[in-house]
Image 1 (tube, rainbow, N blue to C red):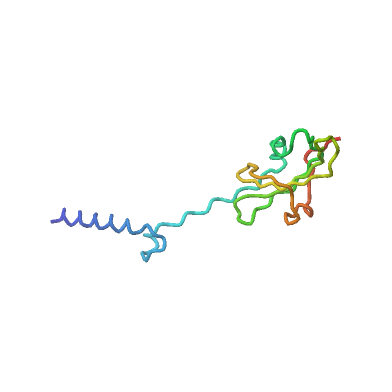
Image 2: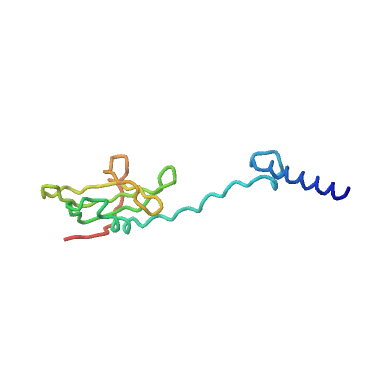
Length: 136
């Protein structure tokens, strides 16, 4: 009899444990599944290092980018990536100098995932730039 009641008790405990899967259930807090903790905030990327490392993918090799400058990284509105701006003096395909070109970079997990020409809403025109590669 005693053995039977302990087995029934064990079975009841296992069944109740299966009901605790929902964090919104009516069970006491100690029986509910805890919400996963958010990942620790990602440190801002080193934009200057990323630009120097990916120079060939950011600019066409024949454009001979000079006087590179970058802004510091800012979190995107969604919080899952970073944005930064980079600008450089470039040479056109015909060899004529272009005016300074500005691009907006999107960075995620220390990797540049998108590059596009800066638009007026990107805040690249009013940002503070730091020189990363001076060329004479």
